[in-house]
Length: 129
Image 1: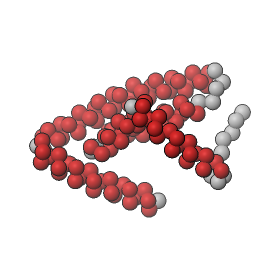
Image 2: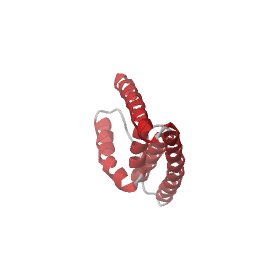
Image 3: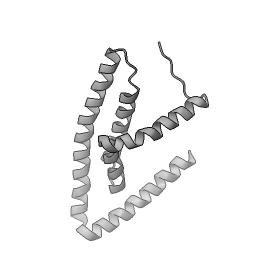
C-alpha cells in the first residue's frame, strides 16, 4: 500500500513539474486547452476500443471460449481511459499507450506474469465450470 501511495505522490509531483514546463513553453491557456483536448480524444477512443473489446469478450463467451485475452484487453483499455481522463501529460501518455493495440500488446506479458505469480502463491484462482 505504501508503494501505491508513493507512486501516486511521485506522479502528482511529476505532473505538476510537467505542467509548469509546458505552461512556460506554450502558455497557460494553450496548456489547459491541450489537457482538455487529450482528455476528450482519449475518452472517445477508449470508449470505442472498450466497446469493441467487450464485444470480443461476449463473442468468446458465446462460443464457450474463455475470454482471458479479451478480459485483459478490456481491463487495459479501461485503465487507459481512466488515465486519459485524469488531467496530466504523463498520465495521458500512459493512457494512450494502454489504448493503442500495438503498445497494449507490450504490456500483456507483464500482466500474464503477475497473474501467474499470484496463482502460484495461491492468492488468485480460477473456477472453470
